Amino acid sequence: MADLLCGERLGLDRLAEADPVFFRDFRVLDNLLDSEPRYIPRCNYFNEVQPDLKPFMRKVVSTWMMEVCEEERCEDQVFSTAVNLLDRFLCECRIDKSQLQMIACVCLLVASKMRQCHALTVGRLVYFTDNSVTPDEIRQFELVVLSRLKWDIATVTGFDYVDHVLERVTWSREQPLIRRHARTLVDLCYTEPALFRKSPALIASGCLVAAARGLKVGAASAASVCGLTRCRVEDVETAVVFIESLVEAQVPTTPRPPP
Image (cartoon, rainbow, N blue to C red; front, side, top):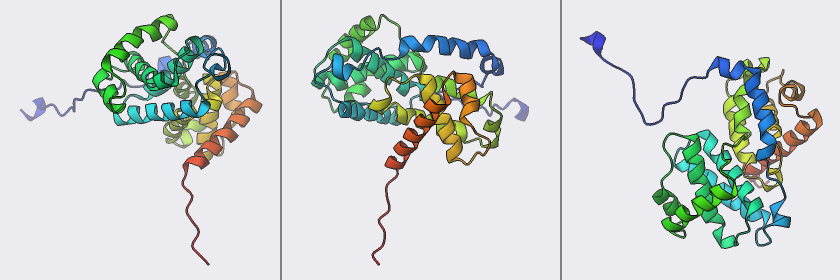
């Protein structure tokens, strides 16, 4: 009877094992690179479409979106997808600043339906807004967002490149934490207004190089990543410097003891 005992732990979220064929086939990476231009926001909407919105407002709402995803334990792809949907929608439809959080809720809802098995519920999203948004508003604007984006919501984000690059660079074996650190940096980049029109491949490249250098992986080089992601080495190095400054800004400074 002991041989019949099942010791498998079942849960709601089960992740598939990495498919080596999928991640080693260059056609998949090439398709991502060929598709990404249509998912980059087409304009700087702060100047051209949204006179009521300021970059710091996007920073605040995107940080809130990330906190919601962390609280709800969403899969990693949900946050970056939701932010991309938000940015692209704001390029297409003028809103009042009082509607920004409501649109963010809609984008989180749509992204969770696309990127994970169990979508966020409207009720939970309303809860995270302290009831400043109603369920009816979210449901009504879900169709507005989808129609403005022409139902093209299978976005390419920086997250999508991480595993493809790590599968192909030799130095990724030196430090197993590179993947986790790079994904954390990708999320951080998607909260930054200064990066919202940068290509996903550039964001991923910068985060991978910054993560590897932060973990003291000696063999890591921007050139090895750029050869895969079609990015210029100079652009990636600039991105790395910016990402490292973001990380430094996140770390609280310890006050020096008085002399």
